[in-house]
Length: 280
Figure 1: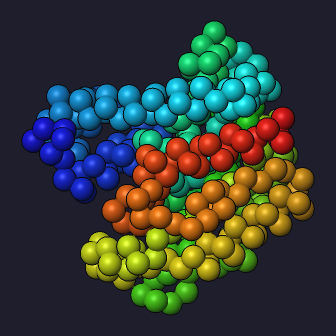
Figure 2: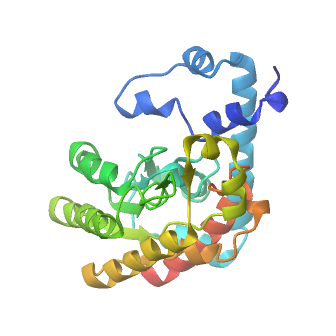
């Protein structure tokens, strides 16, 4: 199977970095093992990953060609050798995601500074997972910046009933994550709202149908509003990525309608970097 022939499920597992789960707890996953986990040839996996990296690099180069965006990277108040941490779920861990685009922008624009982009997001995580891992893992990194984005998995509706995490619990979890960083680190914190979904695509997705899962943009909008309120309450900036794709277009989502694709992530990244102008 060549990289161009990977089926939808295999591409999904690669793009959302399944093999990073053991890596997160310090276990090395060499290329042969990653290929074995995914059931693909190692050479094909290497080719696919190289193509993905080229896509991210191209996006980063395109954004840096815009002087106002390049100036944000230039003026970012993080010292040489410093770190920027991204915390969240599959939207953040995505191989084409805003975190990886930022990583490449730093490498291209400020190579001598060796700024570390620490992406600790994991697919499937809710704000409750994020709260636990903040104390058990994330605080130990002592990052200079922490970007926090949850909500997608909190808003799963199970068999048409309640959301996996209630809006009250979601609000409390995100607040406690922020307070943990404020109390136990010197990190500058930025909150991100969850992104919307394409409901018709989600409702017709066979995997979601089989699992009896669905998403409603009203739930995600409520989470976005809660994050905005927390930003004011806790005095931290908020980047409203829900508004970045305010009218979800199927063309900027992967096949499930839940996750922005490479183009969707480019839109999010552009919006995020422009919003950072007010933060600096």
